[in-house]
Image (cartoon, rainbow, N blue to C red):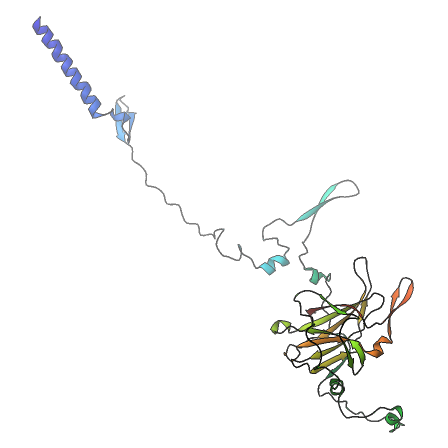
Length: 330
């Protein structure tokens, strides 16, 4: 009896040791990572290690990437604009319409990418307005007398031959004593108002008594190739201005008179106006611009054509003007 119990205990001990060995030794071969099981032709189960294939390197594409700087990815902007911003390989834009039979059709077109200036919607800049221009040192060149001329004609008409240029004679009455405190400052990149009023300072010029307005001119290279645009707005009348340019000492440098101004008719949002364009000197000698009127201009008038026939606009000594700078015609 004791022997039987001893054998039974020994068997249990051996089974326990075997179970412990299984727990310590891990799982079966088929369950181990890196092995696979298979059955051979004789029906026997076998275990073989899994051999991993080396990772294949992806071939580097020789074609240009999307971000690579090439003419295909980054075409010339001007060339692309001429093609209507349609890149090579892109579908041409089209519009859909219905014909007389009710059939829907598509018509391809080339986009028009011209600017408004290229299309002619924006008028090109104009040149200077025709006028009489007097400069310091200018003298009249005597022409050959015509047949039958009277050498005493000037004396009969009371015209004196002083031998001086016109601007020198004009300078005798102007302009070092002018008041500069109430001058108008130049305003960049916009049209600003210039007013000749009853309360404006007055001066007796060679051409007669007139109110005047003094304007300081801009200086610098940015004014090269520019024109002064002077607009005189019509109301009860319109100012026919003359312009005198002065240096830093208020000495006359250039006089512009008899401007052949263009009249622009009024519309629903602005008044009509006379427009004159005067060349601007970028040498720096001209520091001031003086706007005034002549007595002989006050005796004239501007005649315009309207739907109701010709209309007369009298010339007046006071009124509103606008001044700014524009590009000259190249």
